Length: 210
Image (cartoon, rainbow, N blue to C red; front, top):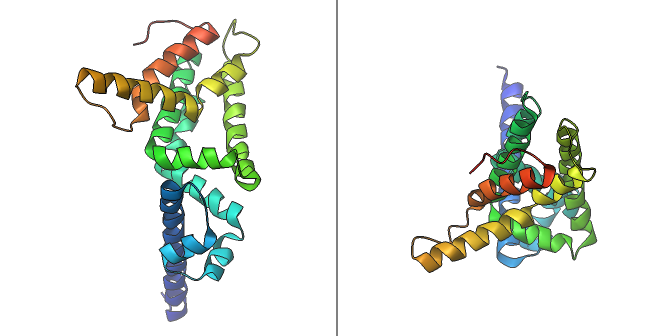
């Protein structure tokens, strides 16, 4: 490797590290405060505000990067598996499972992000774009189901929303706390089985799931 190539590689590694640090700072700030302040994120990441703008261009660009990081670390790449399974109901189940794992990855940050989307138009556009992709995926999957209701795609979309898993997981945690077993785990994957049952009931699928 030539000295120039080495320096370029080192420089890129430094840029990537700075970018990752800013994204992590934005996630932490969002989870703690429920908002996104570029000045606060810059301070937390120990960079200049101009660096945040240079890396991401805008608050929306930063939030896109936060969403990308959540998707990568939350296993959203596995969503492609749902579209390769031969059995259409197994495909729907996998869709539900992967979404549950994704929503569970950083429950607090996701809850804050989606709440902020209802109040901030710029954030709302970022989240709406992500939701549109899930809506499209739901439409593809229900298109393979026989005798599905006309609103099957909408039903699958709504039932795989963060709010559905969050509400079901909260109820499970309350029940566990009352029974003295456990509770407060913050794990949305406990809701996956319930969502699968809801989806199958709503879409007319087999009921042989736990």
